[in-house]
Image (cartoon, rainbow, N blue to C red):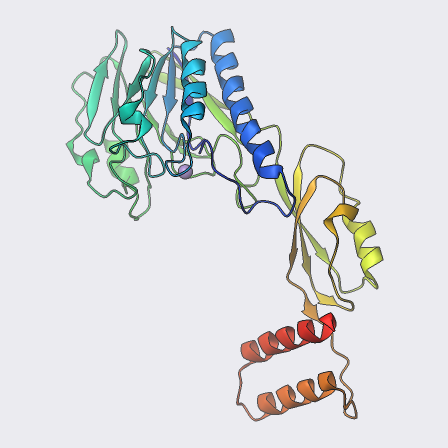
Length: 345
Ligand SMILES: [Mn+2]
């Protein structure tokens, strides 16, 4: 049997914080739809028997009925594929959720918070999901495989570390004897033999670097052959620039714009000691640079006989530090706040 395993799509997430540029949120939501279409196309072209969606398919808080209809129309396009969804902490199985209220196509099975087993000819599929935005009910204890001659698969959402998100211990999961465990929750792809987090289908921001996509697998004679196939056409990349030897904002802009022209989205993080005030107009940067982060410290050339407000401020701070009235961290913070204030004027 052949399967596709995805998780953490987070459909309709607003993407509020990924960018300093307008419009990128909407663009990224369009790309979520495109990614889902690409998964469905792959399933059609490769005659995939099962689609496992391991939670956080959508955002309960933001999901619109139009997006649910869009999803369901896609599911209708693959009538021969059985689809199993385990609700996650962002799309729990709760009253008034679309999982409960929407009339899903008949190839879609949505698991609830109690463990259910669905028997197919060759495969038994077990699953459960979240009944709330947090869950700690240990359902995993109650799962016992009854027919080991068949392929047994578990679909769920949760943490393999201690947390409030359906924590499950890896050794307990391993001991259950499943041929494949389709997990979701961790957005970075990871696997422990056949216990697999596919990662988020598309990256949700600069804390989700690298490639994102789906797991495609085939189980033959109880042996699992699986591979990762990228779906997200972009990668989020963080690039650090040490500004210590850069003389001006113009020079810095030139260096920032040396990033390659490609589909990837860049966050540029400034570090080191700055000699000038950094206040860059995003319009001067290439389109694929979408976020700037300033972790620089100000370079101070303090002169004892500087009686400007700035000079006096530094002198006062130095005195406090010398007399151990403030620690190094507070000194750095106050220096930073002060210098930023003076830079503005
Ligand atoms: Mn998630």
